[in-house]
Image 1 (cartoon, helix red, strand yellow):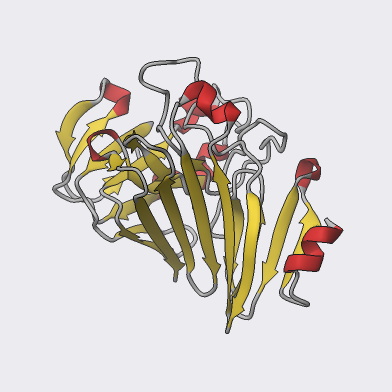
Image 2 (cartoon, rainbow, N blue to C red):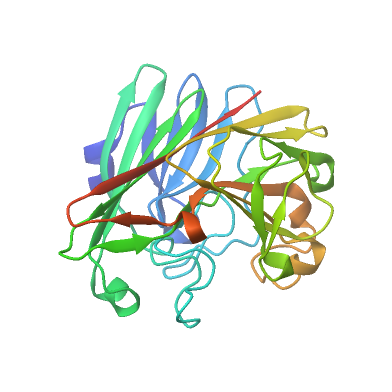
Amino acid sequence: MDALNGRFAITGVVEVTTGQGNLPKLHIHTTASEAEIYLHGAQVTSWRPAGAEDVIFMSGRSRFEDGKAIRGGIPICFPWFRAKADNTQAPAHGLVRTKAWRLDAVQQERDSVVVALSTESDDQTRRWWPHEFRLLHRITVGAELQLELVVENTGSAALRFEEALHTYHRVGDAEQVRVTGLDGVTFLDNTDGNREKTQHGDVVLTRPIDNAYLNTENELAIVDTVLHRRIEIRKQNSHSTVVWNPWASGAKALADLGDDEWRQFACVEASNILSCAMELRPGEQHTMTAKICAS
């Protein structure tokens, strides 16, 4: 911790501290917002614009352990989403959300702080996926929260991958929110055997939902009538959007989620999954970006 602070701390603005489970985290405080980022999974676990409530949900039962996923925040899913299609024994949502990422850089830019973390293929990832890669997660904490996930093919063969910034947006009551920006978009309903359907109007949460909206880069918004706020999500190089909430029935099946905590979040995610998966030739890079703001 001392070594990390010696390299990256900015007095009064950025500090590396011991988080839950003795895992290192960055605490960032600017005039525009506050945030927490764990090196475990390069995962944002809090973002609070100045004078506002937290925009990010965290489960009170989240595990903070090596090799375990943190429930809530913004997990990074790569190189597959949900279960691995050809191996159900592989880790759900990929290989990097339970890894300790390297902290590469911290830079202050006026009222924002830019954090860069990276990870790459190793013997553990090759056990499940035989490709060489490097990931960079660049997080800008300010009046907006900007997330950039950069994937580089460092191997000698082409690779195809899925990715998602699996954002748990904190809401007052999941039954009282609507998601705009998806009217008319085709989606696959994972609660109904991945049947293809078309969205009509805003997305309203009335039951378990696990929809993958395809071929859309639309700007999205979560309209929250309980907390009286609007969370906007703007995407770049993200061709699919996932909307997920397990509802009461699904929450009971998740040991790291309280039975009633499903009411406190709505996952609306920038992604490239299923038919929108990405391909990279050797040496190529791809950057997916999500910008989140709340008003």
